[in-house]
Image (cartoon, rainbow, N blue to C red; front, side, top):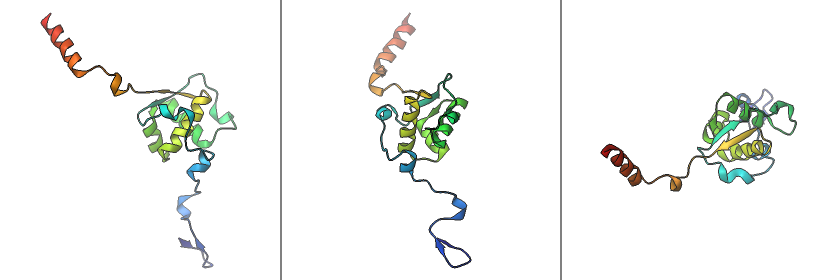
Length: 131
């Protein structure tokens, strides 16, 4: 808490700037329909044909920031959260909104259950060596 010249106490730090609660950024939502596809290493890629996000009045500044970061280079959900200093849950909801609006798409990593077994790969390598 800080006090101004008149002895009034403030609950915020003047250097911190305005405080926006995460639920305000997501309009009270804690999940999104596409959230099941958004694990920490899912890569978010900007759609090249997408309209300018700043021209869309339904998008928040955080939405616009996500699109701009992804236009520079594809970003994982974790990288977006770190870069924007936002909780992962908020970033998942915002990215879901952007997927719905066709501003970005998400590339999911291959689930470990779908990866080839290490023993099969070793057998293939050994077979190639034997040729």
